[in-house]
Image 1 (cartoon, helix red, strand yellow):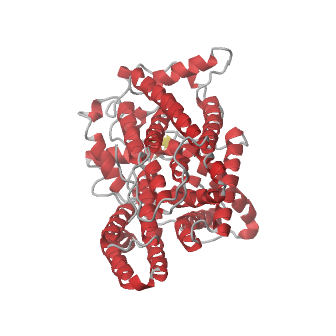
Image 2 (image 1 turned 90 degrees about the vertical axis):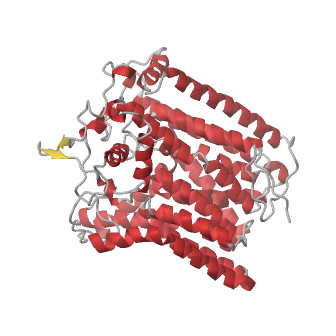
Image 3 (image 1 turned 30 degrees about the horizontal axis):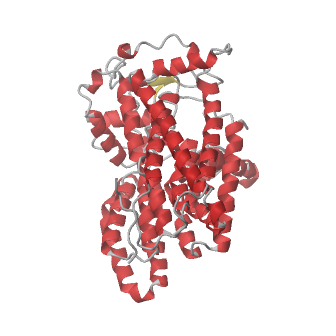
Amino acid sequence: MTRPRTVPVVVWLIVLLHLAVMLGQTAVFPNLRSPDERQHVDLILQVRQGDAWPWPAPGTAFVTQGTMAGGFIGTDRLDGPQHLADRQDVPAREERPSYLEAGGSATLTEETPDGELAPVFNQLVQHPPLYYLLGAGVVGLVPDWQDVPLDQVWLLLRWWNALLALPLPLLLFATARRLRLPDPLPVAAALVPLAIPELTHLESAVNNDNLLVILGACATLLVTRVLTGDLTRRTAVLLGLVTMLALLTKGFALMFPAWIFVAYLVAAYRHRVRLRAAVTSLLVVAAITLPGVAWWVRNVVVHGMLQPHGTFATPPDLTPVYGWSDGGFIWLERFTERMITLFFVQDHASTRDQDASWWMARAAFVLVLAGLVTALARRPVPRLEALVLLFPVPALAGIVARGSWEQFAAFQNVGAAQQGRYLYTGLVGLMVVALAGAALLRARWRRTVPVVLLLFAGGMHLAYQLDVWRLYWMPADGGPGALARALAAVGHWYAFPSPVLIAVVVSGVALSAAVAVSLSRTALGERQPDRPGGVGADPVVAA
């Protein structure tokens, strides 16, 4: 039996650096500016108060006025740079409004295009409630939270989301090692989240995707164990629990049962003498998953559809009116562009500018694609295993494309539901298989992969942050002191005391240096010689 190996110190440093990046981004991105963040926070607060529990029916939940106390910038498309450093109307930290001071549970209304006031629906009741129940528990840790400045509660929820995402580098590392990728590729796998700025941005915001992504990462590691011969009931129980929780989080988890079935089918094919064990374990997974499946069965029974539309009590008419000749190529071009761009970076102004971060997203896409093609063609990982690990990405993309096309066919909306972040649930399998392509490199070149990936991640974040700071923080007049004023504005807007933010930034810089030094030594051959991880040689969580 191969002796289990501990997680290298550098991986723990990467985990902490990942956390520092996420916490730093809670300051860079103003509240309300992440995807549907206002609605996510609002639903959590309504659950905490008992207004959204039992779970509201579609078309009956509205955003509350009190939620708007958490932000000082609009939620709609931005019309250009915001120059937040020039804003003088943001009160001091202790003087900011609380949930009750801003209107509490009263329904928020906004002006419609025809000049009428209408309530703002909270469409997120279309999702299962698990994420919002957990978030309500976090809010409950704040005494008298309704009377506390709401931006502080908001920031606490952002930190909670960052902690949810904390294990992602470890799960990438463990999956790569389980697949026996040669050293130091498992370490390179741990670096992947740092190379995707939009991922770390999402992880630092309030969004139910964060829970689903980490559950998807756990499921990928467990599926990898199944593919590599682990047909034990213990793994089946864990896989069933993860799937059940995912199904109670978001509809994208509906692809999990098919994925797991395929994984056990491949495992049974490759280990024919253990067919009975494979079938038994699959039945265990199915039995434990049933409570999660029950939520979606309930939707069909109660609402007449698998996932109701959160804004309408009666499902809208989506009868196809438009076809491919009415702009299908325009829809496909936009869909492809958005899925690539918004997987790696975020277009906060929705202008689709081909700026620095847009081009970096293309470079990242080419690298991932090259790794995938190499891995599937040269098979450093058995092709069947690689295809099963990749299964979630086309499955998720198909679900997104179907919903987006449905909106196009009914309303000629060419941009509906086109978010690359929807593929993150399959991130671990996608990136580990792509990195497997580097296993074919000579040992001395392979040792450089982690440090090159770290440098690329730095370039991605630099391009991303340049675009973000220009859009949000830089003052209108520019000049030598512009950056200092922008930094001062970030410190003023931040909901926690400035020493907290300073500690996060200093920690991030120190951790970046430590990781860079460690990976540079590996690249120069100062570490142990290359050795493949053994099947069954899962990392032991050790100090």
